[in-house]
Length: 337
Image (cartoon, rainbow, N blue to C red):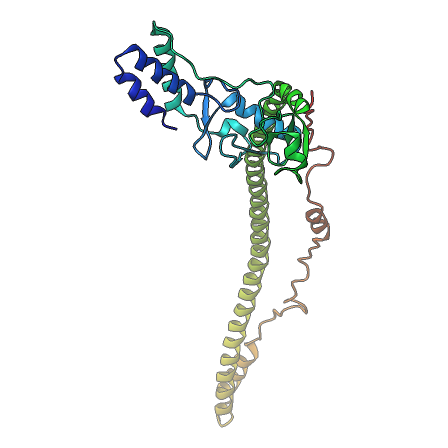
């Protein structure tokens, strides 16, 4: 589109005739190919660099969606290039702020112009002639190519194998675009709510998992504390019994050593001729007694530390969420209301 060029020409024009001609040329270039009128803001620019009124583009897009043909797509009415839209529809197309500003300048120039200027003829919206068959009116709509056409094009021309519909039916369907836009807006609100719900679910899940892990960590710490306490009781008795047994071992060892020395003294006294000395040695041996204490059978046994964790194991196996609390899954929405 050479609109900026024509605008610069308009600004340089000095005479009324030249100004009127420039305004007429600019007016022709600012016509929407759908409504055949000056673009109505907001103006959107298609990927093919052609411009449309967003309202007209939305009506064209909604008409395709209504007829359930390639929903989410439509063809540029100027070059027939296919335009693929995202979930936002035509509201996701970029606005052409340059053209909108030029429209404002154009309208100011028209309102300030004192001399009338000829406007280019605009084709009527009724039944314009077919470009391939001038004597035929555009009375059918090709659903496959998304263009109006005539009966001869369907019978003999380029649309022989295409699916068509009466142009009046398509026109009536496009007139109901407002309700379709309202439904789309409602669906979009519902989609936004669902996305927000998904984000909230993720936050709640993270918080609940963290709380669950903290509870399990607390139980693990409690079990570890009980394990250490019970193990310490067994270790304490082990140290007590082992210490007592080692004391007896030292006592009996000392006794054996003393008895050995007495035996040696007794052997030497066998040759003693002095009866008094011999009797004294015998008295010492008689008064030396063995320790009377001994360990009872089963002294080393630790079986009195009995334990049975079956009940606790059953309790651990039965750990679960509290019964009777239903998760909130009530999410209902009626799209057609």
